[in-house]
Image (tube, rainbow, N blue to C red; front, side):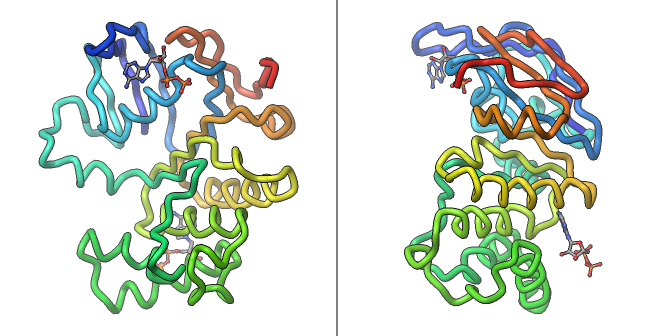
Length: 229
Ligand code: ADP
Ligand code: ADP
């Protein structure tokens, strides 16, 4: 589902070598934590997958497609294969919960009838059916993130990327969010989650890929966090 083959990334502006010859293979349906200290290269991996940046060398395969060979105008097609959630939620403040989610379907040209069917379905999956007509500033942090997750999966992407999804949440709320992400994974979506949430990583006993200084230093089936938070 996701393959990094000998991927190196040097940022041209300052010459920083963010990734050195990374190899990483993630199968369909896996749940993978990406851990490592600040500056290790985690965000660079995520930006490469979203094709926000290109590698200096190497190959990146997403869903059987070599995205390093895809022309920039085709990037929207790649993005259809990935749902993303961020630490800071990134909802549109002047749209309701319903509209925020519907918008993700509108931009890929979904039929209005399909939007009316699908949005209530994902709202119920994240347990927010009662908040469809609220605006983001009327929601708690956990509710924000649940909307962001609903938006990320509404187009049924095979891969969900989560970049520190619990970073702004208290521990109880963080666990609620993890329960939802686990559910999404159980239904078949491949999940790659970058995180510093030591307790979550250590209690979930999932695959852990640890990055340090732009290299994979550990890759364990039921891994642990191991860094000081
Ligand atoms: P992490 O997400 O693990 O904190 P990053 O991928 O953000 O790590 O950073 C990896 C390395 O690349 C760091 O040395 C960082 O300073 C450098 N870096 C990240 N983004 C840029 C950028 N846009 N321009 C130059 N250097 C960058
Ligand atoms: P349908 O066959 O009606 O199109 P879907 O395949 O879209 O239904 O969804 C089947 C069930 O799985 C629904 O309960 C839906 O909310 C849920 N679901 C759909 N997509 C995802 C996803 N990416 N991750 C987790 N659950 C999903």
